[in-house]
Length: 267
Image (cartoon, rainbow, N blue to C red; front, side):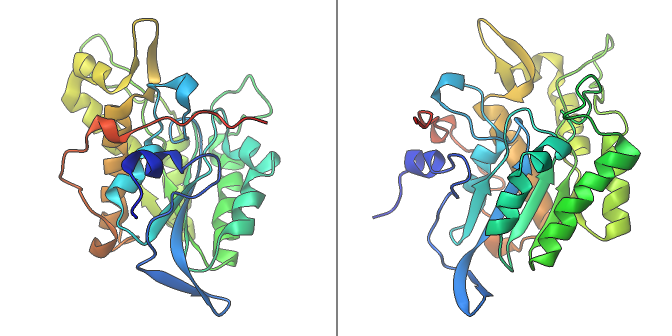
């Protein structure tokens, strides 16, 4: 019996992979296993729960664009930077599970920018790159492929109605690192900024977590998460990280009803 779409979404809880039928496999240690795309990132990508709805991380929508046989393990966590994710042992947990033939998609900067918080702050051209290199080297040492993703843009517009970049030097620092280390790069920052520009200041409100009580210009609702996940999937294909056989629905409408928020795990 196949999983319902609600079950598929709910399966992304914490570090538990979203499991699909294993049609394609990779060889590791003499055993076949389904290829897995791990996400290391922050709240813009993370799994959200019922108490946070309608806030939606783009990682929750990414499986809708990937074919059966390619799993997603969403390890992104609210509030983490490239530094705090490492310091809390979360990268070690990912590297302990990742296998040859898998992928590690790395998206950080939103919290690296918080210079008032030494537990999270990194400097773009030094410590940010140094921490990102740990992810890259760790994945490669285990036969997995690292993929860097520049941070998705916030909803910011100037008085003339132009979408305004919000991440300072971090995207440029990541691009430079990707070139230097020969790592695949998904330029989500540039693509999302262009998308927000096309949608405009009013149109983008339908993509962010704007509710009757909240005006959140950083986190997404279901349409926004789906739109960003589509950008990510297209970039994975364009950059030849994934093949055409790995992706689906890139030009199809994805119903908002496919998104669901599981109840938080209880102790």
